[in-house]
Image (tube, rainbow, N blue to C red):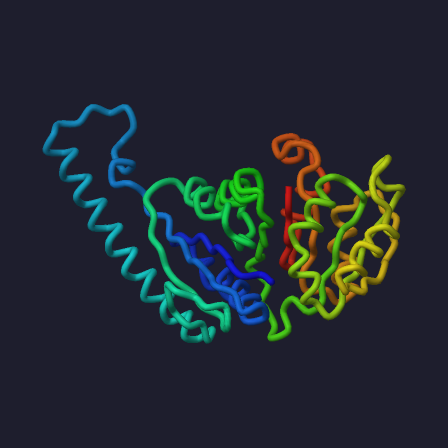
Length: 284
């Protein structure tokens, strides 16, 4: 079962959306949530390559530290209120019998906080990147490329239902990324009430077939159905088909080609990241 969920947060206003999705899954799996707040080092607030007298450096560092203390206190208070609203028990010693949460604070860059805490998480939950404001892209990339764990991306427009996780769709083409995603999300599939395999085209040469994936799932008690489609733009079509099947989560392998190439020239994963209106679990 899914037992440890990492939720990296910062003061970007997305904490409630991300934590509510994590809480819904935590209740379904009796999992423990680790909310990790990324706090910048006071020295990082100093102007880059600008010489400053010692008293000025000391003043800036002190003010930055005081501001961080204030932001941390406000964020913790809000998260405590959210935990109560979401019926999460706060503890640092979870026993796996109920949904629990704890808060930790780490200094450094967000990508380093995600890398450190994410490698022993069963799932990392992040906000959908806001490319216009340049927010969240590095967090998503760190989860996908630096931890080896699945990442749940939550759009701001989504809100989890009481049955969140009961109906999932899975994008399947037999690729290495898709097969890795299947292995890393068995807990989600086994706990779901309905699993739909979305598949189109011929798939990857010498890759596993849809029928072989059905047999693989059946060995684990997962009875999945198949929804076939043909599309010139598979990324956009996956989102539409997932919505048509009533799925609350889309599972997919991510960035079969490089992230930079997909960002520049377009690709199926980037199309999903940019346009998703439902939560998406990705694995690389």
